[in-house]
Image 1 (cartoon, one colour):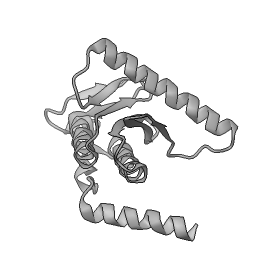
Image 2: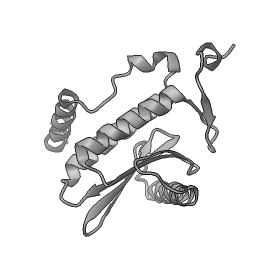
Image 3: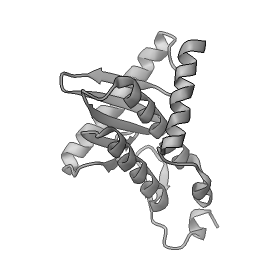
Length: 177
């Protein structure tokens, strides 16, 4: 019997990239995305797998728009990853930032299997948005690779104490190299 068979009434979804998620994981991802939206007043958030299949979108999208946007996100990140590899800049936590006149678009790896898109108003400081988006993406990656029975053991969320620690660590990294 697999772990998923031990969890009563737990629906599963197999994503295009072959990853299987259960509703508890999907709910945890949605909760984090909503928390990020509240903290940054994002204009739009979307979580997709690396093949472009949508897991969460902060506003309803038609199936065609969701598929198109998901595919574009997966392709964009894949191209950026390859560019980073060729130039020797690849790291486990890639983040693409596109500044526009009124908003900034962030595409982040969320572990090795998912992507996080966040569109943030232009008045939100880039450094602050970057810190919150990277932390949310890290936590989403953890959700996918943690056994369902251990999900409640994860320290998820963007509470003020955790953010203070992350912010202080970021500042220390600037000054201490």
